[in-house]
Structures are given as structure tokens and as C-alpha cells.
Image 1: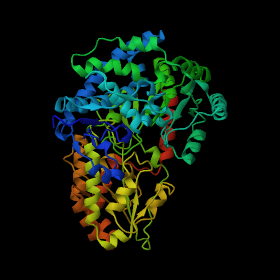
Image 2 (image 1 turned 180 degrees about the vertical axis):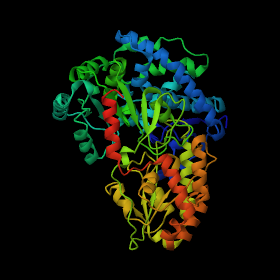
Image 3 (image 1 turned 120 degrees about the horizontal axis):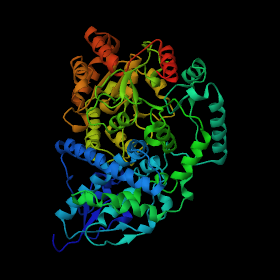
Image 4 (image 1 turned 135 degrees about the horizontal axis):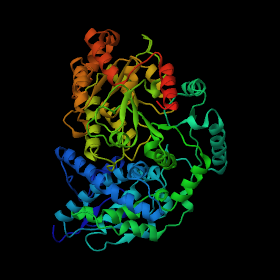
Length: 595
């Protein structure tokens, strides 16, 4: 091997490969499923992951602690950069989601690179030229960029540059960073003007000093209108102007203030602020003052409360205003928006939200010592959903599938976890009966994330398999099936939506994987589902149960023990109420009056 060139592939972009020697594959994200035959024709070495699944909980604890040590330092530097004296909580609200993910991401990339360099010190690679680097505009922009190969190559290139001298580089057209995404909306002057006008109008309705502003509250439109009217417009939507981050030039002096921090004792911690200073989104540095002045100019009155399900993570304009309002005494209110809250042990989003809001409305679970006051209330997302009516004329079985980014975005959801997920999909498919397969509908995620999911599914389910798109609303798809299947219940909202309307459901996942580790408070509820024959630890066992019950799904679902397990589970994780509007009206009026 010594006389043969070892070339490290850190990306699936093949123009960054040199296949004249041995290609060292850094991670599974370098292997496109659609190019598997080409890869098999090359001389390759697949580098084993730098950590085992058993080590992942320890890594999660480490990066969580590192975040808590990093945040106060970054907060202090941002105060200096902007000439302000905001509290650490203010900056936790604003930069917390980005910083948490960034630390998880770059630590994962660092571990992969250091293992490659230790294993093959003579290796070479091709990095992205700095002239082609892209600074994220905002938190959501950062998350979108992580879906693509180029930005991950940029991060690998930055980290590689910290170690073994310099590597050859190549420039690319920066427009290739742009991701086709369901999340990304291009700024529009017309839309921005309308939003500014709406902001001024809704702020003038009702009592200005007692308003509860909300954004991304996951309220169905009919429920939203009723709550606005019933609260006398004490509940008010938050509108904000679109922000175009492309117009801001980099401010080197500000970023240098952040960079020149003496921090940490390990090698990784020693380079962390170098990386932070370069990758910190524009919204926190160059664009911060403009956004702050604009939003404070639109909303001049103090809010009694700000409420959201997801904007605590991804809407930097909302977070800037929320941080300022919190320092004036406004109540911050979080709403559960997904099914895994209160369920899994290592869950970054839940931890972060409970650390920044004052009150959190769950779907049924409670938590002592969580930081925020956790209060169960009817899920906003599930308002108005009626229990399903049994239809004997529908033979379809609906199989919901998931996918996430190919490169790790947060522990414990490693690339290895998703590899195992697709292996389980194959095993499940192999063990389904011919009759079930004939009546099966597959519903993959609307974004492929580079996994070539539809190609994988066609290979796993050969023949005329039906693959559904998201043009079909999930509620309609769910209504038009006799049985719902899910192989990722720890990371699913859909199975709770299914149980909420009393749709017969079968679940499966491997409980030994660290990503599937349950919170101690949830273990008993999932044990009940397992004993009731709803949840299985093996895709093979789940498939056999589907085959067994398919001819009499309604009779199987009517079993008393099964009904009891579902009622108990949903009482904790999908609270149903026939009076949800009344309950939320009382709650919102209480908040508005200072309760």
C-alpha cells in the first residue's frame, strides 16, 4: 500500500475524486446509491466510522457540555461586536439552535478526519478553494446548506486546513450551493411590503398591551380564526419582512473579534472558535443591527407573550424580537410540534426549547426540573381531526418512511443509524406476503436528501409498487388505508396522527440503537405497545404480524388489551380533547391577563 497513492474522498461529488490510486471513502455519505455499480468498479477502502453506536451517548453528553461552555464565551463576543449588553439567555434564544447543530456537525467531521489521518498519514485529498466558500445567511440557510455536498465539503476543507499542511484545492461556481428545498422561500419586495402592512394592522387590533403574538403555532386555519375571534384579538399573528442576506458584505473585523478567543484544552476545542468565526450566519453578525431595528420599528409595543412551535429554532427575525421582548418581561411560550417530544432520551430540540421558553405546552407528558413549566394541553397540530370511520372497501396498507441528511446533523442520528434504517426496510419488504405487497402504498419523505430513496424502494419492492408523493395530503392518505405502518416511531409524528384518529397501526424499530433510547418516563408506555402486539423490535416480526392480521384488521384492532394500551399511550403522548378550542381560549386569555 505504501507505493500506492491514497486519496481521501470526503464528498460524493466525483470531480473532487482522484481514482488513479486507492480511493479512501471517508463516510457512507460519499456513496450515492445510484452510483453503486461505478463505485464497485473502483479500488476503494471504506473507512470504519470513528465511533461505535455504544459510544454515541457519551459523545452526545460531551457536545452538550461543550455547548454550555461555548455559549457564554460567544455571547460575550457578540455583545462586544454589536456594542450591546444582552444577557446570555438572549443569545441562547438567538444563536442556540445554530450553535448546537454546528458543534455536533463539526465534531463529527473532525472525528472522521482525524481517524483518516491517523490511519493513512500519507493520504492526499482535494479541498474546496476558499474563494468558493459560502457563509450561511441565517440558521435555516445553514440547515439547508447542510443538505448539500458542497457545504459539507467546505466544512471538511476548513478542518483539513487546520492539520496536515495544505492540500490541493479547486474552485466551483457558488450558485451550486443553492438547494432545491421545501423550506426556502426567496425574498420578495411585494411580499415583504404586505407583511409589513399586516404587522402594523394586526398590532392595532384589540388591547395593544396584552397581546400574545404567535408564529408557526401549527394551528389549523379554522382553529386559528376561531381563537383570534374568541380572544378578542389578544392572540395575534406575527408577520415579519423577508430578509435578503446576499446584500451584506463580510465584516472581517467583527469576525476577528470572535476568532481571537483562547478556548478549551483539547485539539478540537482549540480550533472551534476559528470555525465559528468563519461560519457564523450573517444574521448574527453583518445583518443583526438592521434586522433588530426593522423588527423593533414594526412592533413598538411590548408583547405579553410570544408563542411558537418551530420558530424558536429557524426564524432568526422572530428570535431577535423574542430575545428583546424576554428582557422586557414577556413570557416565552413553546408548543410541541412533533411526536418524539417526551419520548426519546437524547433529543437536542426538546432540551433547547425547554432551556429558552418559560412555559411549554406538551401533548400530554410532563417533566420536572426541565427549566420551563411543562403543561399538557390538546395538540394544536391535531385540532379538529376526527376519529376514522371503518371502511371495509379499502384494502390499502400505508407504509410511512423517513429520511434525514446524509451527513450527520446531530447526535445520536448518525449516518450508521440511517444505513441500518434502510437495511430494515429491505428486511421488512422481504417478509411481507404477496397479498399485502399488492395493496401497499409507500410514502417517502418529500425531500430525498441525496439518499436516492425512490430507487432504493424500487429495489426493495420490485414490481408495480405504488410510491406516493406529498401532493396527496397525509390526512387523506391516512384515511384511505386499512392499516398504517411505521418503522421509525421514535422520530415520527405520523404514527401519533394515526393513533389519534384510531387508525390500526403497526410499528417497529431496534431498541438497542442509541438513537432509539427511550426517556425513562416513556419506557412503560412503549412496553405496553410492545406487549399489545403493536410495536415490534424486528422488521421481520412486524412483517409477519402484518401478514397475519391483514385479513381481519378491524377485529385485531378491537382487542381489549390493544385498545387499553393505545388509550394509555395517547393519554400521555397525543392528548385528545373534544373541547380543544375552549381549553385553548381559556389558556390564551389567562396568558393575556398575566396568568
